[in-house]
Image 1: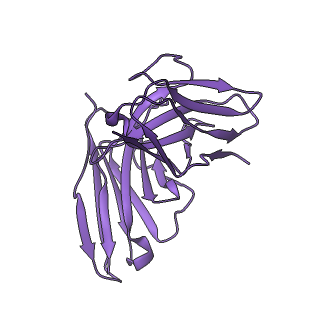
Image 2: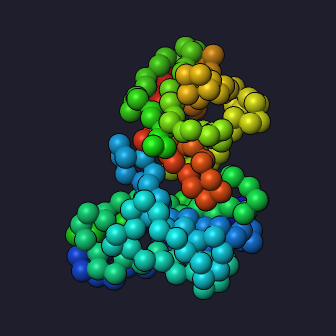
Amino acid sequence: DVKVTQSSRYLVKRTGEKVFLECVQDMDHENMFWYRQDPGLGLRLIYFSYDVKMKEKGDIPEGYSVSREKKERFSLILESASTNQTSMYLCASKDRRSYEQYFGPGTRLTVT
Amino acid sequence: AQRVTQPEKLLSVFKGAPVELKCNYSYSGSPELFWYVQYSRQRLQLLLRHISRESIKGFTADLNKGETSFHLKKPFAQEEDSAMYYCALIPGTYKYIFGTGTRLKVLA
Protein backbone atom coordinates (compact mmCIF):
# COMPACT_ATOMS: atom_id res chain seq x y z
CA ASP A 1 0.00 0.00 0.00
CA VAL A 2 1.47 3.33 -1.09
CA LYS A 3 2.12 5.70 1.73
CA VAL A 4 2.76 9.40 1.26
CA THR A 5 3.26 11.32 4.46
CA GLN A 6 3.57 15.03 5.12
CA SER A 7 5.37 16.43 8.13
CA SER A 8 2.51 18.51 9.52
CA ARG A 9 -1.26 18.56 9.16
CA TYR A 10 -1.52 22.15 10.39
CA LEU A 11 1.05 24.90 10.45
CA VAL A 12 0.84 28.55 11.47
CA LYS A 13 3.63 30.89 10.48
CA ARG A 14 4.25 34.59 10.48
CA THR A 15 4.78 36.76 7.43
CA GLY A 16 8.42 36.73 6.38
CA GLU A 17 9.30 33.43 8.02
CA LYS A 18 11.03 30.69 6.08
CA VAL A 19 8.78 27.63 5.94
CA PHE A 20 9.68 24.03 5.17
CA LEU A 21 7.05 21.47 4.16
CA GLU A 22 8.29 17.91 4.03
CA CYS A 23 6.92 14.98 2.07
CA VAL A 24 8.06 11.37 2.26
CA GLN A 25 6.93 8.41 0.17
CA ASP A 26 7.78 4.78 0.77
CA MET A 27 7.17 3.23 -2.65
CA ASP A 28 10.40 4.11 -4.41
CA HIS A 29 8.55 6.42 -6.79
CA GLU A 30 10.68 8.50 -9.11
CA ASN A 31 8.22 11.34 -9.57
CA MET A 32 7.02 13.68 -6.84
CA PHE A 33 4.79 16.75 -6.91
CA TRP A 34 3.72 19.71 -4.82
CA TYR A 35 0.29 21.28 -5.31
CA ARG A 36 -1.71 23.90 -3.54
CA GLN A 37 -5.43 23.41 -3.17
CA ASP A 38 -7.67 26.43 -2.91
CA PRO A 39 -11.48 26.62 -2.99
CA GLY A 40 -12.73 27.48 -6.45
CA LEU A 41 -9.28 27.09 -7.96
CA GLY A 42 -8.80 23.35 -7.65
CA LEU A 43 -5.28 21.92 -7.51
CA ARG A 44 -2.46 23.92 -8.99
CA LEU A 45 0.99 22.49 -9.56
CA ILE A 46 3.80 24.37 -7.83
CA TYR A 47 6.81 22.18 -8.62
CA PHE A 48 7.55 18.61 -9.55
CA SER A 49 10.58 16.39 -9.50
CA TYR A 50 11.01 13.54 -11.94
CA ASP A 51 14.01 12.10 -10.10
CA VAL A 52 16.54 12.81 -7.37
CA LYS A 53 18.04 16.30 -7.65
CA MET A 54 15.79 17.01 -10.64
CA LYS A 55 13.08 19.63 -10.44
CA GLU A 56 10.79 21.49 -12.78
CA LYS A 57 8.57 24.50 -12.26
CA GLY A 58 4.87 23.96 -12.38
CA ASP A 59 2.18 26.52 -13.01
CA ILE A 60 2.66 28.70 -9.92
CA PRO A 61 6.30 28.46 -8.73
CA GLU A 62 6.70 32.09 -7.67
CA GLY A 63 7.60 32.41 -4.01
CA TYR A 64 8.47 28.72 -3.68
CA SER A 65 11.49 26.50 -4.08
CA VAL A 66 12.00 22.76 -3.68
CA SER A 67 14.64 20.26 -2.74
CA ARG A 68 15.00 16.58 -3.63
CA GLU A 69 18.20 15.21 -2.19
CA LYS A 70 16.86 11.70 -1.61
CA LYS A 71 14.43 9.71 -3.68
CA GLU A 72 11.85 9.34 -0.92
CA ARG A 73 11.79 12.96 0.23
CA PHE A 74 10.58 16.11 -1.52
CA SER A 75 10.62 19.40 0.35
CA LEU A 76 8.74 22.58 -0.44
CA ILE A 77 10.29 25.80 0.81
CA LEU A 78 8.65 29.16 1.21
CA GLU A 79 11.61 31.52 1.39
CA SER A 80 9.62 34.37 2.92
CA ALA A 81 6.05 33.43 3.71
CA SER A 82 3.30 35.82 2.73
CA THR A 83 -0.39 35.85 3.60
CA ASN A 84 -1.36 34.90 0.05
CA GLN A 85 0.43 31.60 0.59
CA THR A 86 -2.14 30.57 3.15
CA SER A 87 -3.49 27.38 1.62
CA MET A 88 -3.71 23.60 1.72
CA TYR A 89 -0.54 22.02 0.34
CA LEU A 90 -0.67 18.55 -1.15
CA CYS A 91 2.25 16.32 -1.97
CA ALA A 92 1.94 13.44 -4.43
CA SER A 93 4.14 10.75 -5.89
CA LYS A 94 3.97 8.27 -8.73
CA ASP A 95 5.95 5.66 -10.52
CA ARG A 96 7.53 7.04 -13.69
CA ARG A 97 5.78 4.37 -15.80
CA SER A 98 2.33 5.10 -14.44
CA TYR A 99 -0.14 7.93 -14.62
CA GLU A 100 -1.67 7.44 -11.19
CA GLN A 101 -0.57 9.87 -8.50
CA TYR A 102 -0.77 9.04 -4.80
CA PHE A 103 -1.47 11.93 -2.50
CA GLY A 104 -0.45 12.79 1.02
CA PRO A 105 -2.97 13.99 3.63
CA GLY A 106 -2.10 17.65 3.09
CA THR A 107 -0.68 20.45 5.21
CA ARG A 108 -2.93 23.38 5.98
CA LEU A 109 -0.65 26.38 6.21
CA THR A 110 -1.82 29.66 7.68
CA VAL A 111 0.41 32.70 7.32
CA THR A 112 -0.50 35.57 9.63
CA ALA B 1 -4.92 25.61 -24.61
CA GLN B 2 -5.16 22.58 -22.34
CA ARG B 3 -7.96 23.03 -19.89
CA VAL B 4 -10.41 21.13 -17.70
CA THR B 5 -13.75 22.68 -16.87
CA GLN B 6 -16.07 21.56 -14.10
CA PRO B 7 -18.95 24.00 -14.37
CA GLU B 8 -20.62 23.21 -11.04
CA LYS B 9 -19.00 24.16 -7.76
CA LEU B 10 -21.74 22.48 -5.78
CA LEU B 11 -24.20 19.79 -6.70
CA SER B 12 -26.90 18.73 -4.27
CA VAL B 13 -29.03 15.66 -4.89
CA PHE B 14 -31.32 13.52 -2.79
CA LYS B 15 -30.36 10.02 -1.77
CA GLY B 16 -31.42 7.56 -4.46
CA ALA B 17 -31.43 10.20 -7.22
CA PRO B 18 -29.13 9.97 -10.25
CA VAL B 19 -25.92 11.95 -10.21
CA GLU B 20 -23.96 13.47 -13.06
CA LEU B 21 -20.83 15.47 -12.40
CA LYS B 22 -19.78 17.34 -15.51
CA CYS B 23 -16.27 17.57 -16.90
CA ASN B 24 -15.25 19.10 -20.21
CA TYR B 25 -11.72 19.25 -21.47
CA SER B 26 -9.73 21.07 -24.10
CA TYR B 27 -6.87 19.08 -25.60
CA SER B 28 -5.74 18.48 -29.14
CA GLY B 29 -4.31 15.01 -28.65
CA SER B 30 -5.70 11.73 -27.38
CA PRO B 31 -6.58 12.48 -23.75
CA GLU B 32 -5.81 10.52 -20.63
CA LEU B 33 -8.54 11.42 -18.12
CA PHE B 34 -9.08 10.58 -14.48
CA TRP B 35 -11.61 11.28 -11.74
CA TYR B 36 -10.22 11.84 -8.25
CA VAL B 37 -12.31 12.03 -5.07
CA GLN B 38 -11.66 13.55 -1.67
CA TYR B 39 -13.92 12.50 1.19
CA SER B 40 -14.12 14.62 4.31
CA ARG B 41 -10.83 14.53 6.25
CA GLN B 42 -9.33 12.02 3.83
CA ARG B 43 -6.66 12.32 1.20
CA LEU B 44 -7.31 12.76 -2.47
CA GLN B 45 -7.57 9.38 -4.17
CA LEU B 46 -8.12 8.00 -7.61
CA LEU B 47 -11.72 7.06 -8.34
CA LEU B 48 -11.45 5.93 -11.93
CA ARG B 49 -9.65 6.46 -15.21
CA HIS B 50 -11.22 6.45 -18.63
CA ILE B 51 -9.06 3.72 -20.08
CA SER B 52 -10.11 1.13 -17.51
CA ARG B 53 -13.82 1.47 -18.35
CA GLU B 54 -14.74 -0.05 -15.02
CA SER B 55 -17.29 0.95 -12.41
CA ILE B 56 -15.98 2.00 -9.02
CA LYS B 57 -18.42 2.45 -6.12
CA GLY B 58 -21.19 2.47 -8.72
CA PHE B 59 -19.66 5.38 -10.64
CA THR B 60 -18.90 5.28 -14.35
CA ALA B 61 -17.46 7.83 -16.72
CA ASP B 62 -17.47 7.70 -20.49
CA LEU B 63 -15.12 9.62 -22.67
CA ASN B 64 -16.98 11.47 -25.42
CA LYS B 65 -14.37 12.81 -27.81
CA GLY B 66 -16.95 14.54 -29.97
CA GLU B 67 -18.24 16.61 -27.06
CA THR B 68 -14.84 16.61 -25.31
CA SER B 69 -16.50 15.48 -22.12
CA PHE B 70 -15.82 12.95 -19.39
CA HIS B 71 -18.85 13.18 -17.14
CA LEU B 72 -19.07 11.10 -13.97
CA LYS B 73 -22.35 9.30 -13.40
CA LYS B 74 -24.06 7.19 -10.80
CA PRO B 75 -27.65 5.97 -11.11
CA PHE B 76 -28.52 6.09 -7.39
CA ALA B 77 -26.65 8.45 -5.09
CA GLN B 78 -25.75 7.38 -1.54
CA GLU B 79 -24.99 9.63 1.41
CA GLU B 80 -21.43 8.29 1.53
CA ASP B 81 -20.87 9.68 -1.97
CA SER B 82 -20.77 13.17 -0.50
CA ALA B 83 -17.28 14.44 -1.31
CA MET B 84 -15.21 16.72 -3.48
CA TYR B 85 -14.69 15.41 -7.00
CA TYR B 86 -11.94 16.51 -9.36
CA CYS B 87 -11.61 15.74 -13.03
CA ALA B 88 -8.01 15.59 -14.30
CA LEU B 89 -6.46 15.65 -17.75
CA ILE B 90 -3.01 14.17 -18.16
CA PRO B 91 -1.40 15.53 -21.34
CA GLY B 92 2.06 14.21 -20.52
CA THR B 93 3.97 12.00 -18.14
CA TYR B 94 4.34 14.62 -15.42
CA LYS B 95 1.66 17.10 -16.11
CA TYR B 96 -1.75 16.93 -14.50
CA ILE B 97 -4.37 19.53 -15.22
CA PHE B 98 -7.09 19.48 -12.61
CA GLY B 99 -10.49 21.03 -12.83
CA THR B 100 -11.70 23.33 -10.08
CA GLY B 101 -13.71 20.56 -8.47
CA THR B 102 -17.36 19.89 -7.72
CA ARG B 103 -18.63 19.36 -4.22
CA LEU B 104 -21.33 16.70 -4.19
CA LYS B 105 -23.82 16.73 -1.34
CA VAL B 106 -26.21 13.84 -1.07
CA LEU B 107 -29.18 14.76 1.07
CA ALA B 108 -31.05 12.23 3.16
